[in-house]
Image (cartoon, rainbow, N blue to C red; front, side, top):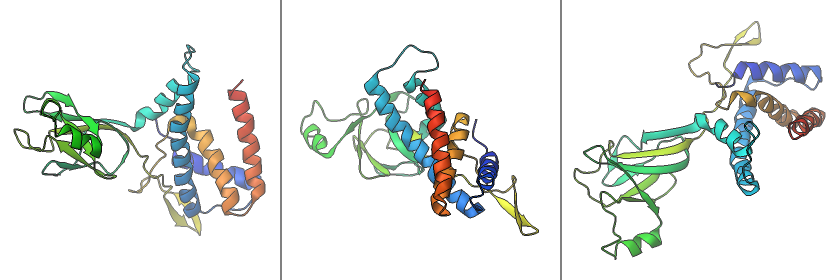
Length: 243
């Protein structure tokens, strides 16, 4: 379940007004909301690395790695078509790919073959060895740049098509947007706007999002006292969670 953009917006305004730290415009809020969401999202991967070093535990609801995996589930896309068009054996990745996972080749009999990722040096070595050269049932792929991959072997029967290249990946969160209409010079929430976008993060992140946006807002509206209040609240929250 996503986090309501309006819930967070109203909380941010209420706390900012309570602290008498100034007004945050909808435009400012949307920019801060985007950054706050990406900060929290990127932190998942950092925390996952720390969790791997610390090792997993047997606590049902206190395992750091399991908790992060739960929060990342909404961003996991499986067996998504790589692109609408494949030029030769080069495919364009979906625009929302953040971290590419596995790539598969799906043959005419609907058999899936996991493609091995290779780099340029490996490719030069593999193609010189007939025993290691990629085949239809032992495919490989090479990352060309940020959004394209080159599939090997160069030719398959039938030729490469969109139905044959499948990937799994972690998708980048959609940018949140609080939409509104102006009535009597006041911005009122418009839940029916076509470009309205809730936060993509796990529902448990609502409080963290609120705190992070307020922390950033204290910098934007040049009210450092607001950031200090939120940082203290966040420190207390983290201390309670780590008991």
